[in-house]
Every structure is written in structure tokens, then in C-alpha cells.
Length: 209
Image 1 (cartoon, rainbow, N blue to C red):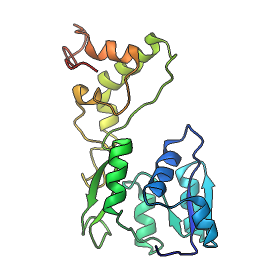
Image 2: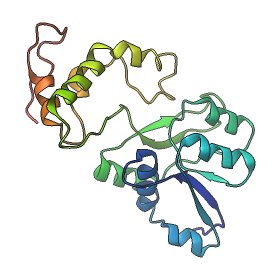
Image 3: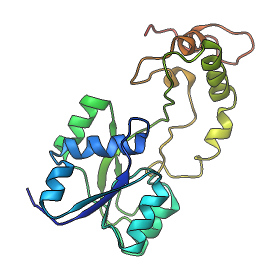
């Protein structure tokens, strides 16, 4: 293993922040820990939000970024200004993440924006909302109504992006939306499964969970 004196910046992994949780699992999948990095005279810098992490790269206070949202302008700006070089993920690490978290992979092909070579990285092809088990069923049902009946509002924020840069697979399909990598909330399952005369999807799913 190449041991570099690097300064990695990523989001906080406090049990509530997905953009901190996945980078932590990403490092684990490569057999690298915070202690390893520190033993190489490196440093792991923690910030809460993505733009706070980006700011440290932009200022030169960090030289390695583990973060989400490849479609955003800040990634393009960092690559175009030669402050970042995108590195592919090792195949063994991708396989590990797929088995442990259900993360699929996606290739950023050469010629996509400022990318000069194909880069493979973990990929979340949909957005998943996490709620507590004790969330009232009525609230869970309302969340599903918002996601399904107003999905065009969410699609509109992503459909101008190319598929290589897009973290959302559209058009959204309620049947696929119900195929999550975690167990559905009871209220969510009932709402997805029922036949409702007021919705354009009847029924939304037929499979058991």
C-alpha cells in the first residue's frame, strides 16, 4: 500500500449524516482507517456540509476530497482549475460496498465535461429518505404522497443533467421507488401497496417486502 501524507476532508459521520457515513465505509472498503492516515503523518478533516469540505480544497487546506454530488458546479470548478484529479475506485472496494450497502457503480466516461479518462466510483442511483420506526403512519403516508404525486418537481431539478453526472434515475417509477435497500416503514408499505382511486398508480407495488 502506498502511504502518502495526505489531508482528507469529508463530512461528519455522526449516525445522521449520509455524506459522512458513506466516505467512512468507502475508506474501510479500501482497508484504510483514520489511524492509518494519521500514522502516515496525514490528517482527516471533518466538516458538516459538502460546501464546507469544498472550501478547504479550494483554499489549499486539504488535498483529498471524499464527498457527494458529482453533478454540482463545485466539482466541475475544482477539476477545471486543476485542484482535483478524479481517481477510480478499486474493483475490490466497489464489490465490498455493493455487498455491504447495496451501492451500485457508475462510470464517468472520458470526455464527460473535463474528465480525461474513465473513472468508476460508488453510485446511488436514487434518493432514499430515512425515518425513525416510531414515525406516525400518517406522516409516513404524507411523505409518500409528496414524493409520488409531486415527483415532477424533483425530476425538474435533475433532468437537465447528463446520465453520467446524474444521481437520479428518471422518470421516477413508484414501483422502483418502493424497492429500497432498507426495510420500508409500515405506513410507507401500506401506502405503496394500496389501490387508491385518487392516485394515477394503481396499485403502486404488488411484490411483498
